[in-house]
Image (cartoon, rainbow, N blue to C red):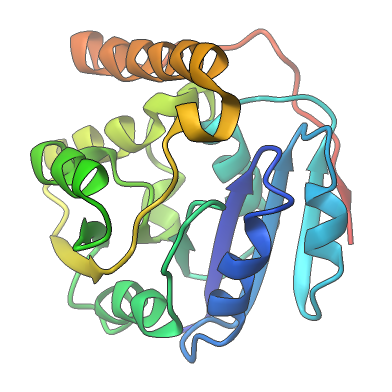
Length: 225
C-alpha cells in the first residue's frame, strides 16, 4: 500500500531540511510532498533541492488545512502521513511508527504524541492530543472530512472531531524525543503571540460549532516539480 508524506510549510526554509532528512530515510514512505503555503522565503527552493521530493508552491497563503488538502489532492496514495515542517528530533523510526498501523489496516488514523522532547510541548500534547500535527490517515477518509481545506489551524481539531463522529479506529503513537519551537521563538514575542491567538481562535471555532469557516478564495493553481 503506497504511502505519501505531506509536509505543509510556511516560511520554514531553515527548519525544513532536518525534517526532510528523516522522512527521506523512512522505510515505509514512498513519496514526499512539501506544500509551501504562500511562503516568501526559500521554503519551496529548499524542498526542490531534495532528491525525490515533490515541491508545490501555493501562490497565496491558504492556511494549514488548505495546504494539507492540496497535498492530498496531488497524490493518489492510499495512505497519507502528515508532518509539521519545524519538528526537532524526528527520526525515520518515528515516521514509520506512525505509518505502520494504518498501512497494515490496524487503524484508520494514528496520532503522534510528543514525549520527552521538551516540557512545554509534552504538556500541551498530553492535555490536548487532538491538536497534534503528526498523523497518518487513509487518504479516502481524510478527503471526506467536511470543509477541511478551510479549517486553517483548526484542521487537526476538525479531523479528530470527524473521526470520533464516524467511529474511526484511532491509535496514539508516542514520539519520544520529538518537539518543535514555540511560535514566539520563531516569530518573536509580539508576532508569535498574535499567531498563537489566531491558532487558538481557529481551534475554538471548530470546537464551538464543529464546522470550519468557508473561504472565498478560489481553487489555487500549483507551481510544482
